[in-house]
Length: 85
Ligand SMILES: [Zn+2]
Image 1 (cartoon, rainbow, N blue to C red):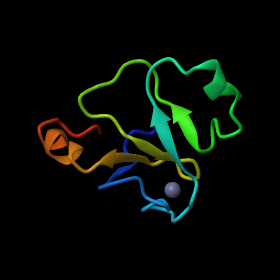
Image 2 (tube, rainbow, N blue to C red):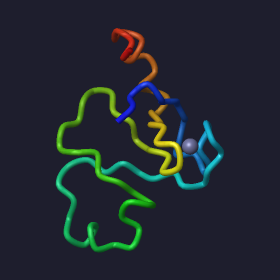
Image 3 (tube, protein in one colour):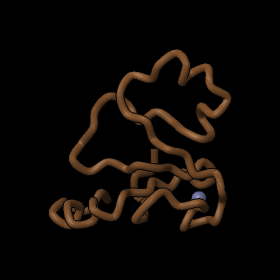
């Protein structure tokens, strides 16, 4: 995964702030339920983000350009971290 592509949004954007695609998925953390995996929205309306949740984790991901979108309150926390590249 290319972690250099990310942006911020106050709430889930209807379209990707980077490429304009409407294919913005929720990232679901933790073990997905069987119902979730069987859902037609899996992989499109939402994706799994793994079991580990850091202090700063993206909440949404563009399915078109794979940009990670962080909630805006994560911005302050990111400033305390070294850049990811
Ligand atoms: Zn995009």
